[in-house]
Image 1 (cartoon, rainbow, N blue to C red):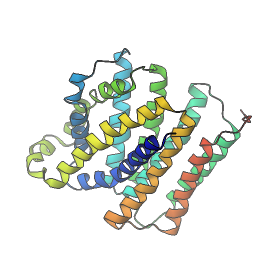
Image 2 (cartoon, rainbow, N blue to C red; image 1 turned 180 degrees about the vertical axis):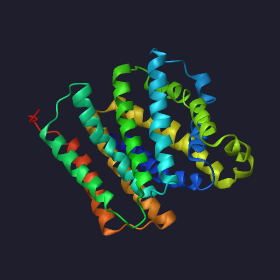
Image 3 (cartoon, rainbow, N blue to C red; image 1 turned 30 degrees about the vertical axis):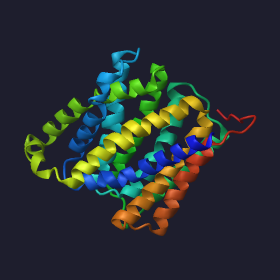
Length: 290
């Protein structure tokens, strides 16, 4: 990978990791799903008027948009509002790799190599350790929500494979535009008009910064750079960069919110990150067990 591209990739991972702390900044003030709806409203508008619709079915755009915005980031944002620490949210979202391996095996008939099985077992050990953590960094509801987010990420990846878009950025942008209205409706269904009527009083500097940071550096710029790297380099070269996200996520939570990293939390995080790393390793020839 070229030096400049590597630097850009690392910068994106830093931004994505710190994003969990920025999400926490916003959900301390307003409804988590409303925050997510505002994020994707700004990310898709007005940019969508300058990018032509990709040549894929509307069904794929809607399904991916809902999985990406509502499933991944709606649930991840909600998990932080439900008490999951920003750092652990960034770690546990990596479980999408494990879900993806097994969904790929059962739905797409993809093979499972030895290293992927070992990596999945390591990550699952980390998840089990999280279930025993009692230091306040993990809540039961937050854990369920972040695992739903991880599962949604895996399903979103399968949707992209099925859609096979040639214009990746356009696909992401148009899909994101399908998400705000359902998110607004969910907020209204859950809480009525109160989140909307109280929004003008809640739009302080922290909320505005949180929404703008998530909409532009994280979503538009971050995914534009990421998709460009995916097109330019092999997945095995690009994907390991994502292992930096939970590292910066943990650092951000500790730096900005003094989130405690206990020994159990550290061991669980290392198991999950190591499991994902082992799953990325490619052996030649690859040994396939199933």
